[in-house]
Length: 404
Image (cartoon, rainbow, N blue to C red; front, top):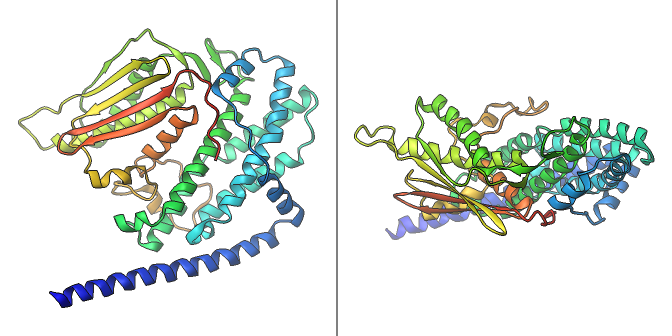
């Protein structure tokens, strides 16, 4: 027995040594690639990136977007364009510097380098764009913003591909390995939060050019009905469940269908869809082979508070072990059997995979969407019974962007 323990300790020590050696090699590789990047990017552009990265990012609130976009007259549109022309390069520069200095060689992964190149290209285009002085300039900048928004459509799946490559390289599928990479999770939280903000600012400005929609100010709806959004999310999630299992548990909603508040309905739908989808899968997996019992329904409760609108999604899908709770918020953990990102060849990175669903990103990204406007997402699980998800949405609309 003593010999077995000694052997186990030796194997553990060897594994730790191997991981550290791999990390040192990855770090040296990252440094070499960084030098090549400096040679590839003109010195004046690189200096400009680092200069902008030292500037403070300016956050805005949902209330500010509502008030500012309520009357999109020419002066308002010009001021909005001037703000974006000045602010977006700062935010992009912060991300470029971060992406270029990631630990454990993540910066060297081809998909991550591709994302960095997209950010650099967008940064250069905005910096080369002349000062916005009139509506003609504003229209040209808006066209550029549309181009930039399209370019960055696949940033999340591309980063996921790069992280998946790192995961394989470091053999970090086990719980212990995941716990050793908090800096990666911290970076991804900040990176994706910044992306949400950038796309919100660009999307809001672009949408103010679209034909007016009742109760909408850009992307923001002044009268979002959470019960209605939940019904739409249920329909979408159950259709996926039907496609995967041939059946889907019922979902019951409790709440005031006449209640509305100001929010971005696409954000709310995204968060609810992920929560409902997870609950449907958990319940279906637990009762799929049980011929004696009918799968219990998933319950959604919408509560109207003075500060928050809280939406609770409850299921009886068996819950999550307490030891597994930290994993649900990580980007390096997935229960998907055949993730699409695993099927891509490293050289076939083009514009990135077109979809990213069920690959361990649903809950972390949903929590970021909630926190972007001052809300939050909490998961409480009872192993052996089920899980309750509490989505808190700030209805005061006065929270500033939590910029990384």
